[in-house]
Image 1 (cartoon, rainbow, N blue to C red):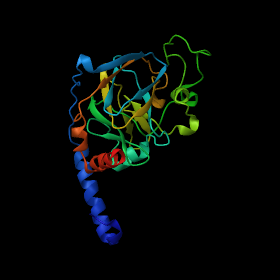
Image 2: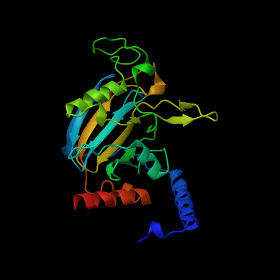
Image 3: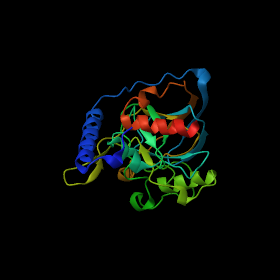
Length: 272
């Protein structure tokens, strides 16, 4: 086994560059985008989340959430916790840093703050997912148009923002704002211009989807609210199907990169 403490600075630098080179080569590789085949007998539940609303789920290790965006809603904020120990939660920074990429699509994984894998992306239509900016807030969306949550409004659903929705969803599990961290915004293709300005490269196509397989028992908070850079963008409902998967459903993700393999090995040790 490699002992990093015994490497000289030059050897350490060489290893770093080799890892970076291989990771960049993988980043440009194509990933399968096919819709997953979900046998009807494996479906546990299907739920529609209206614009501006949120949902909370408990899912078991080996189950998956297939999330469909029929109208091309510009964003949906997602936060994950280890259901058996909620002090372990999604770490956006490690998810990007450890995999050397901001392109989260089929084959990539969502890391916790303890180096383990919370969920694997086993199918994705390629609309892009942002792990940099976090959820929307009233500060960027503007004042709510609905004092009381109700029917959707044309611009931003029920008038809520992603941060408040995630806080409310966390409360369903007995968690608080202190248990939240930077979330993942699904269906948001973040880009950075030459001048460093961030923007959304494109709107998600109607019917975009992503499928996440739970690699441990999870608490899930999902807010159907626009990305912070999509303020004023139209929203639509998203549909979430929870279903059981085969034991090898994430085999592609385990083999996708050295970093994912090490994360899966950390999970193996955790459940041994």
